[in-house]
Length: 284
Image (cartoon, rainbow, N blue to C red; front, side, top):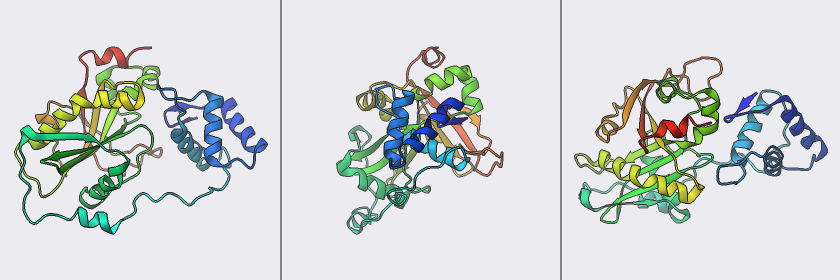
């Protein structure tokens, strides 16, 4: 069975069942760490893939393969409003002037994490959602004022136009998928207007993201991807920033096992971060 980009053999699922039986007092967080240790399931920087393991076990439980202990805490809230942050993120009464030569980009740390969440919840059409696994979030500022926000996280497990373009095998994709990073959110605040701003931001981000990702996770991605919902958006800013359009999704979504095609169709865009990206992605 395959969960979260990893194939679990019958023996490995039996191992998880034994852990559950032998240590019934173990909570879910401890279980995920134990499973990762037993299966040597680690990130490229050596850290355990605990979040992916928790998600995988939740899906195993939903499929009837295992029975998990009850959660010790209620399901985490994806977003919690804070009145003081709501006031800070209120729209100004005038448009914010922007000098493209003076833009600054900063990685979101703990201090500004809730502020970033508030902007996204209020002004992005998809709102705020928890991002599991490796991720980076950014503020873009002009004259010290926030004008745009972006987030990057795990790439799509499988999408035919992208995979055909790369030309990798199933085994190569399993091994190297972490080298592709997905641009999950891109928001320019609604009171900000400037020609070429979006493409300028994408260019700035693409130049610095590899080093930021390496600093956080001890490896550098070789490609960016994003999915632009149609017909809501056309992807013009990605085209202007030299991203390549590979076609459209089928509208299935990541977890559509029943081929229900219930998700919006999206255009697929990629941006290679290195010239020989195929050499890295197709390595064995």
